[in-house]
Amino acid sequence: MTHEIVHRPTFARINLDDLAFNFKSVKDFVGQNIEYMAVVKADGYGHGSIECAKKLENAGVDWFGVALPEEGLELREAGITKPILCLGSFWQGQEKLLLQNGLTPVIFQIEKAHSYNLAAFKLNQKADVHIKIDTGMGRIGVRFEEVKVFVEELKKFTNLNIEGIMTHFAVADDLSENDFTQSQIKRFNEAVSLFEQNGFNPKYIDLANSPGAIVQPDSLGNMVRLGGILYGLGEDVLPKEVEKPVLKPILSLHTKIAYLKKVPANETFGYGRTFKTRRESLIATIPIGYQDGFHRRLSNCGQVIINDTFAPIVGRISMDWTILDVTDVPNVKVDDEVILIGRQNDKKISAADIAEKLDTISYEITCGISRRVPRKYVGSE
Ligand SMILES: *Cc1c(COP(=O)(O)O)cnc(C)c1O
Picture 1 (cartoon, protein in one colour):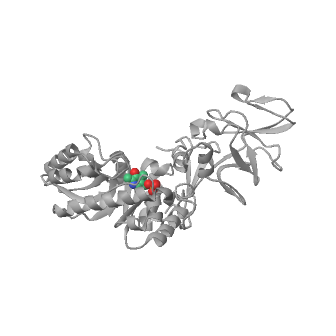
Picture 2 (cartoon, protein in one colour):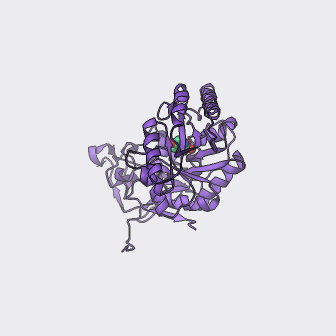
Picture 3 (tube, protein in one colour):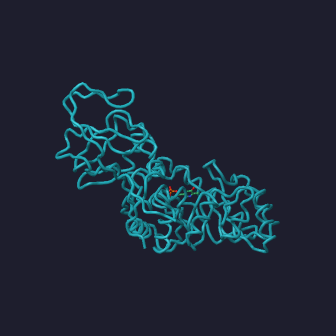
């Protein structure tokens, strides 16, 4: 039984209408004649994979991509019917889970092809798989020089259908590395030819992630695999200098002022006493901390928006609380709305703004918003 409980006022708002908007915007920009895989791994980059997948399924997405078979199972249990590709392959013992739930694995090791073929044989199935080629990412995939041998060996697995061949870009977001991306495309095309010469006829040929799809028109194949830009995270994962589709960040992070006090000059605040007031000040405390994914490294350098005004984070961020200097915020009072990510009229803080301070990318910011922060959805079907 579930009970509606009252939460502290800290939550992330996810606008699913903007998610559908981003998908349409990207599709209009990239092209109508290819298929679109929405990558919803890691709980949809922190936005909620089930809610996002339901919205995107209705919006016409062709495939979903997850990292793990168990993430695919969650989508199936929530009623998602479109094909699901498990980008991170599978682990020994998960073969049946895939086959019985219509999940398609990426494969790049002969042992996995062997065990999957055997499991498919036992269930009397012809099982679709996608083969990943490592053309320069160096992470997972059949190394491009070893494709020839791999293809030969694949022929003996008669219960497998090679439905797709894919690769993944290492630097598609960096135009100064265009030569490397071009060499990845070339290596990939050679690998695809080897499959074709050996009698395989894969339906899907896919290379591009978000930056690839926007920047490299010759990398579209017949499907693109998009994560970041669907969530509106284009700001720091697409090159600055290129034309791009209109994207709306779909997540905003909110809380309220829990406690407010007037304090004299020369008082210190928080663990380690790292902040000292220089003047009589108004100090606010908000109920969010590093356990929520509000990084401790934003201590004394991050900011929030209250009443259309930026207010600095002062002192150390602790596990559950953050302290703000709100002396310069007009009419500030307890329960005022605080925006940690998002916009209020002309003021804006994006996940990319925070990422820049932390020397990371926006994906890590949204992925890092912990489960303690409830997601509130706008535009659920
Ligand atoms: C995560 C992932 C993507 C999506 O990348 P974005 O930059 O978020 O578009 C595409 N393909 C693979 C193999 C991935 O692991």
